[in-house]
Length: 629
Image (cartoon, rainbow, N blue to C red):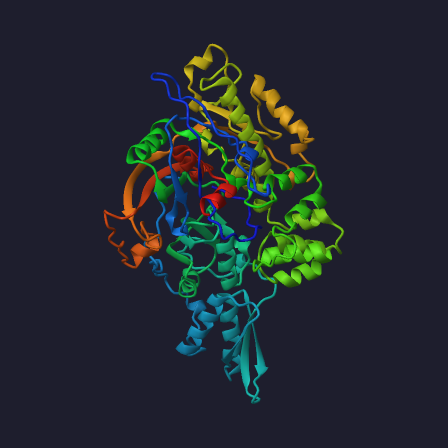
């Protein structure tokens, strides 16, 4: 599941704690699920934080009573494992280097006649470390013919290195080895027995995917865009996913395990093709809800309803940001080509005037607000990779005048998420009204996916545009999934679980009923129409996608536990298992109640919305604050 890039200040409040909702209508026996309206939400006390209603999240499917519980009280209470395209749950199980086939030695690459074993080891370590600014000094051959042959062999074995004879500090002749300037990684010598891409499992704690990749790239001294992934994972969680990188030795990645407590890399293997965006089936979640208030019957009723009925496939609150600047507002500005407004929203301070923050991005935003000087704002944030750093770098480069160029400094995958957030905002409102007004049966004019096309849950707006771009680069064809417009006669052949709602864009088909006008009206209210999504700058164009109205989690199972100490873990992570950690024994007479729940979702679906449906509670940050008081 992809998320909006992190450009918000850290909060001491847990990100996904919940608030109880009112009584619900009863589900009539033998009927379709009854739509249950959420209570009126008015936001936090200062009115600055988003509520579910602000984001179009207003309906429920089932009529059970609900209960309360705290989500993500500890980030290790929320564990996410990627599910690969074969349906396998991705785990970190092995930190060792991959076994490799022995290659027949090429006599033309043998350095033994020219260097000692110790010097060859130093050279190999130098090449593996890939510090482009470093140099290595080695002893030189006195014999001119041998020295010439040594340089030829060195050039053949390491074409990305330069070697020259220089005088040492004591006047002796030595060889100085350095990396060629501007040399591409594709020119490196690479064992023929290896695939050109290193694929590995990334385990991370309390970091989003881009933060983790940024940390790895700094350690390796390579650019973050050398890494490929199928989707981004949440920050406040423990997650595992596949990552790949081009022509990087596994040993270099493995070394990082000794230098970080929040990341772990393993299950290394060399493959012929990189991981690509969207190359996953979904995600498996293991979640602990603490401080649960509700009877066992209420708990069982809630999770049984989710297992049997499912939920509305809303985009969750994290899609829209957790601060006073909603990400879909930035997306709307970008669709209007108002790059100055988009930059001002990104750089708007999240804290109150005079309120001190230790958060680097927030310090950068505050400095920009005070000085309107991109250089001073950059001085505050340094080399910290984040959206604020990107846009301030771009603005400084263009003397504070070219806001479009500044926005384009944001990596494309992150930048497009703002526009996708706006699409999600429209989609949530439309699906709520469609269910509220027309109920739970397909009707004429609704859309369903053609049976010969991709599954509706796989039409993830976050990766469809990127997949198209990748396909075009490789010469393949990629297009929108085909949809069928239902008639009065054909509607009877489908259920509400088949119906999709489009995320607006220039390349989608719209329903042939009132829903089409609803979408048009919402867009018009924001000064947007279908043509707005196709812009002269291709990187700011949005084609749209389709998303199923409802989703049923797979493999839903839960258990109820008693405990006394909130700091004691109730589930094990992959790192715990590698370290042979065992769960502490909990007293069955504990004063507090917790729920451990597991389920799997297709990509692009939100686990927080599953919890919302089961508990019947608001998931906005304003209610998280009230719950933790």
